[in-house]
Length: 215
Image (cartoon, rainbow, N blue to C red; front, side):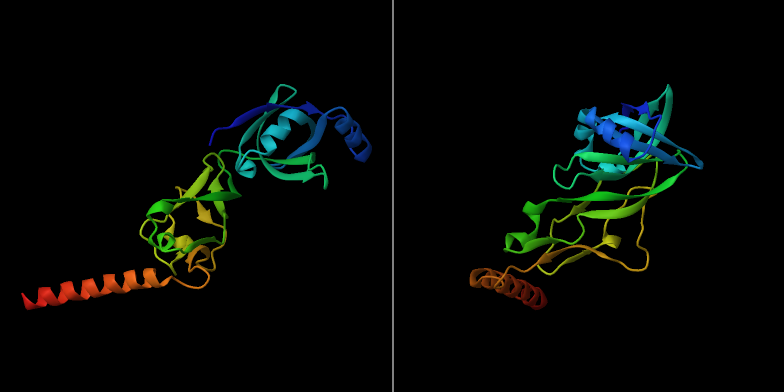
């Protein structure tokens, strides 16, 4: 994942009053904290932050924030939004280093839906976890993890153990092999023609075995 460079201004005052003033001036109040250093109150350009905020996987996006000619390597950790307008009202950034491991939510992408047997038979992809929490090296946070659906049938359950994770990444949940998605049967079950097709396929397989035994 590429690192995004953004500029910010230091805030000389903190509190609700100064935050309201900043918002009226088209700025978003924010703070940089962590790594055993003092918090740094800052403001961001509201228009530029709005574009970044809606970027997929924003909470796993590494950023270099320049404040007073000093650069801070950070991850967005919390975005407080207005309940009606959904505009950002405050942002928390966590300082990280190249040696840190961070817990982030990584989006799951499903591949080869057109080659999934269960979906072709009318099944439904039931996504239990569209995002999976992983412990990742701060300098190599993946943009996504992928699940190959090719050949999977109705009733198949995809557990986290079946997904190949990027190097250095591990699930934050370790006490169980949790479900990421399933191929569920359609409401009403499979149609007659689909059941007949499955039965015919099974019969053909049995005939093939018997022919092989006779030879």
